Image (cartoon, rainbow, N blue to C red; front, side):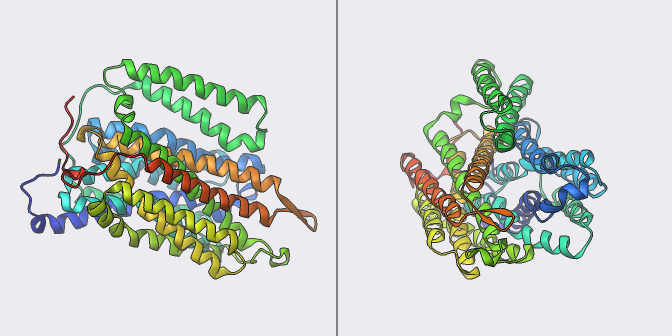
Length: 480
């Protein structure tokens, strides 16, 4: 836990460095989500693979991140959060180097898998902040770290597009490797190891069971459109995920040191926050799917804007800056009104942003406005989620609880991707020899994003009342 003897002024310079390094680590890891987006149309040719096989360069990162997030969180609680943070960053550097040296599918998938294993950096960073920072700094710092998940993706897209258009595509991966090396060195030099550890024996069966269930679930979601939602492979994976999750839950309730403490996770505040996180993940990703396509579709369609990938990145980048700017605002609202209010306010703003998108999509500045409004709501909401989770779990379970919360967001984005892809594949128009998503299809996806944000608002309304007398950062650790 943070040392209560440290005065705010005494801890400030060191605290600032720790926050800056951890936020940079989060942004670097989240860059991996958008790293290959500019390459997607050319990936089959670049990797000498079919279009269906080339998508594994994206799917592998998703699956690896889902497996790594809860596992690294628990290992961080047991053996040291900084240690697991460095291992995660090491995987990112090695994976980026493999990708930079790749010219075929298999090594590229291997490299992207290692990049995905770094997904646990953000929840680990939030947990280190809880252990190391003074209480008055914790809210704004965790809000910034949580928002880095969206900031890196938004700011990385224009940078990746610029590199892809003006240099050899391997430069994207060399740049990622270089950033990883810099961040690793900064963590070694400036981030202390937390003394808060649980010890004990790692729950290998629990980790294996959850990994198998998540791979089955996310593989079915991400590949269902290609394989057919009614195909034997898709339905079999969904059924396997359900069965394994049931067996895993039974094991976790019976073992003494579970990977995920389901009893703690079932507490009202933790459970509702995780549900809201999944719904928010669904809502957030709708913007990333719709706006780039609207910008790049030919203007002759009547609703496309005919812009380049670089222009797409420049349109999306302001939303990342808005998320970063709203992190201290989110912390201030949380400090005065409670994280429940901040989460609900963020949901309202996101819903309003998507509602604007349904009626405003005919000019570039419309999409900049929409992305900024949605980014503001995400910045508010994502800043509140760590406060809600950490206010309801013991200090010794911080990393595992934050990792589960991050995982729920990832599941929400995966479901959003599959749902939006299905809608846009069904609602189409003919444009010469090509079949393109229709304007009504885009409007429906944006409307679903707004509806998802309102559902998150309804879930958040049932969170427990906030007590200003006992701030989340100062609550005592519950007895075992």
